[in-house]
Amino acid sequence: MQKKSDQTRPTENEIEPALTIAPKKVCFIIIKAREFDAKDEVTEDDPGSNPSDDMDAAVLEDHGDDPVLEELTSLINSSSVDEQIDLVALAWLGRDDYTISDWPAVWEEAARAHNERTAEYLLGIPLLADFLEEGLSILGYSCEEFEIGRL
Image 1 (tube, rainbow, N blue to C red):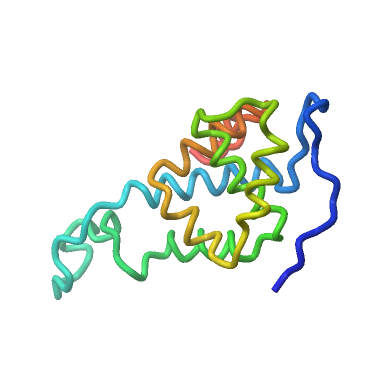
Image 2 (cartoon, rainbow, N blue to C red):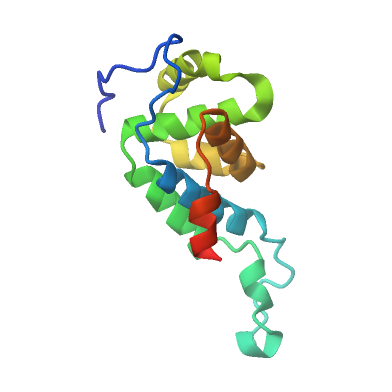
């Protein structure tokens, strides 16, 4: 188990709150979360046919062994504790419940709530990508440049 760092967190007097996690990493998580959110309910558990015969429709269904889900889970779990706390705080900030001046309090609350199920918690938030993107925007970051390179 990783120890929470004693890193100094931003105060309310700071104009630009610092993130431990790179905004580019958050943008990657946002893109992957959107891929995961686009999944539909499984219509046929075992079609028994060649995926190309079904025009690969199964990739749009939410199967338990979904590689996008596995990639997101692995990425979040391999992040440092502070990065995980940043992700939770960004999601909370992006829910329109807070302003930039609330960032230190939101981060501290996320730090108190941190546990070993951060990936499970975050991936259970239905609008995770939107909340993370809005949280980044509130802090003055944008994924626009990163998304252009991914299209």
